[in-house]
Image (cartoon, rainbow, N blue to C red; front, side, top):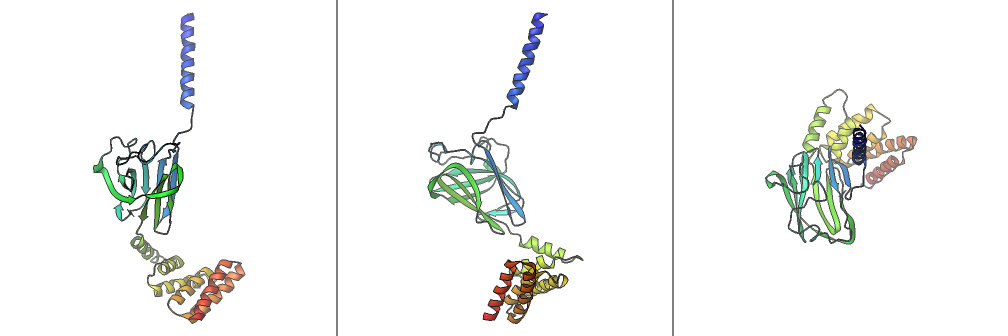
Length: 281
């Protein structure tokens, strides 16, 4: 009986120890990081683990040259595109890809692979590559202690992805072509009863489409909302672009008064700039 009771106690203690071990959380040596950036009509997201240099020689040693690298630590780094993109001109369909690299001193091969199940590069299959690009390395003056991926040069339809560690940097450009899709969206929206006149006019103006159509829509937007000085400013900008300087001045003066009444100095300034440019012409 005593032996059985002792066995029960030891068994319960063993369960408690195992449960404690399962619940114990310790910091990761290479913490996971996620970054996300809107571009075009979608997003680009990168998830990766961040090892540190720790007084080691990284490239050519910790990360050997001319060998496949997981591009970080632990599981391979991953990049997700919610829309079709191009990376340095190479087309990639919307989806998630594992990012592998083959570093050398002067250039890196960057690989976008469809297999998301691997831990590191073991089991890598190049037949599942969706794209490969070659990029030049850049020498950094300051040492980057922790492996870093970040976005730069972010614009409406493009951005640059920078990979830095130690004193090395490589970059590649991501671009999206939204024009055809957005033009179809505008066409569908303008066929409805409640039409986004201002947004459609803004897109046409920004992207140098049919400016006469843009002017028509901007004028309609202001007509439907006669206190919308932002639509009046847009209308004046289009008039100026179409060389209707007199019309641009008249519209900008109306917009200026409305913006002043609302205390919006940014639009007051825009209206004043339009008036100045139109008078110079």
